[in-house]
Image 1 (tube, one colour):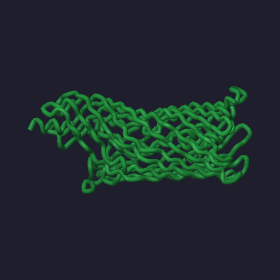
Image 2: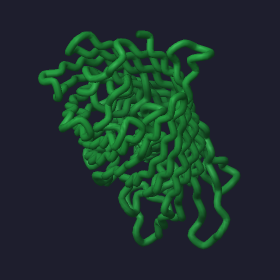
Image 3: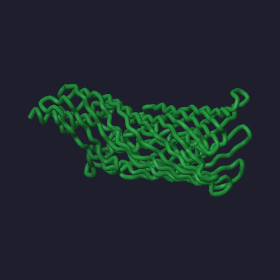
Image 4: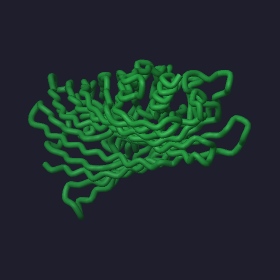
Amino acid sequence: MRAKLFIIVFFILSNKVFGSAWDNSLIGIRQIGMGGATLGLADDPSSVIWNPGGLSFIESKMIFSLGSFFVVPDHQYSKLDEDKYYHSNKIAFLPQLFVSYRTGKLGFGFAGCIPYAGGGMEWDVEDFGYGLDAGLGVFSFSPSISYRVLENLGIGFTFNYDLGLSKSKYDIPRKESPTGRASGERDYSGSSISWIAGIRWLINEKLSFGFSLRSPFELKLKGNSKIYEPVSFEGNTSMEFKLPWYFNTGVAYKYSEKVIFVFDFAYNTWSQFERLLVTQENVPFIGSYTDTTEFGFHNIIRINTGIELSGENIKYRFGIGYDQNAVSEGYENPENIDVDKLVFTTGFGFNLDSFIKNTWLDISLLAGFGNEVQNKEDSLKGDGYPGKYNLNVFIIGLSLKNYIY
């Protein structure tokens, strides 16, 4: 009986903050201003992540870009029989650095950014009995190379060293627990490697096409966990999961020297992240125990389009996008909120040459509005929790881009 109790305690450990919230498309301040569409354009250092095939076409020989996104989410939860909504607004700071260098037909690049997750969730246990303070992210450090095999066709490859970090504290309801609750904290880290391959094809002087493929990879995080309720103990633990394939394609149309239209389509295989494997060591009376939690995620699409209007010292950008979420019906819970979203963006580029030679300031603004979902008692699956869920988000991006030569 006591052994069974400790197995239950271990089940508690695998509280999750995963899902399509991992699908972070906030790469490149300029690109987000145009709705997040960039595959066909791929003409600045953020191509390291979006489409390395474009690096060999960048006009300037060397560019350095440093920026960050400031993300203000509004995760919403309400009980099914109430109109009162609770809000989680854990602000995220997503820095990113890009460098590109071109010589002849060769292009090189480097990126340091957060292509997966980067945010978190925070609930007060006194609000509706669900206490959580969690954050996670995957940081990528990515060298890249591109070669122009033809005058109008470039291919590229990016190698990613991916570092995953996860930290959380929780005090949540669990029916399986003798006390009806589970509380504890965890701190994990781990690394893996992945790759990105891309092509950019200049069909003619006005139209260009881009395609990129981002590989899946398995990430194993190791760390320490502390369980406080229903029984107190501490031990080593690990999580294993697989992140998906990303298939991205897009076109850019240069209407004139001052007007560019862009359109992207992405397909991501989140169904590969169907389960989470958690191993807990030092469990009293048991030793080591491994649990598999089913997620039931599905594959998703993302559609983005935008426009850039260029003046002598300023650029105006506008865009719109649709982000589908990967959380299947019945699996929603306060630890894992995501919904389908309609996204509106705008942005500006300012020439700072009179202050800092050969430097531009890019600013982007994004507002995303979610479509509320309901998780009813008779449709619960996995760790699903009954209630109404939604997610809106507001984002500001700032970066300085220096054209060194």
